Length: 277
DNA sequence: ACGGATGTTCGCGC
DNA sequence: CGCGCGAACATCCG
Image (cartoon, rainbow, N blue to C red; front, side, top):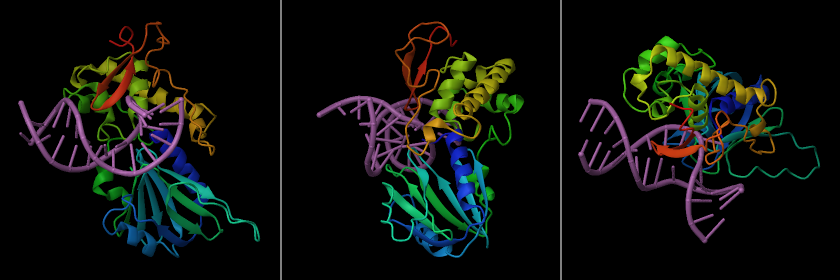
């Protein structure tokens, strides 16, 4: 599920659910979502703690609890946080959502489940160090929503490597939060051939690309109105409202030519061989 | 039934 | 050292 807009949506949901709440109990199944001692730390260090704040950097969720305990959550490919509302007294106990890998029982009797069928996500627990200062967070490039996209800075960064622009856009150190969908969409919107070396985009074209990235991300938020993302709805249905992502073989929305498909860095991309140059 | 999927990391070869 | 490639992870969906 998760690129920047979905993770932003998850952050907003978690803020609503966890605002002012205290964790009564934290539980975690033994999966590779947790590495090293993180599973035990998750279960042991969170009980009794009140949420302080939730931040998002790129695709990373940062949950800060009082007492300097932080939970870092990355959704991988199929991770999501799901809330189970309190069950009425006497009512049948609600079934846990499928693939629940970790749970936070809160003081309003709700339960937040971290669900992740493919186990590509990660959860880690940190004490003492503010999450934003972790090396993996510091290594992230600017976040398009939090920091905006500075075309000059992006041009500088892209000029340092000849790798294809599509590959550069997937690098979280270039921009934090762009994934395969929005890289595909933004390159189409900007009319750029995904194979073009990043260091051969001139400043004006990078400006165009920056606007295209922003437009592509904004579109995901606009689908269902402000703050709502259709394909993240509770029912879990995916609304494919993308211009060309997953539309290879269909006509280009701009010129009608059949959209091509290729693989770069192990990821597939749809693109228009006439319109993107 | 088979192929591919929104992400990241690691090992290998050049 | 840098880069590119493929595999790996585990499950679901069309």
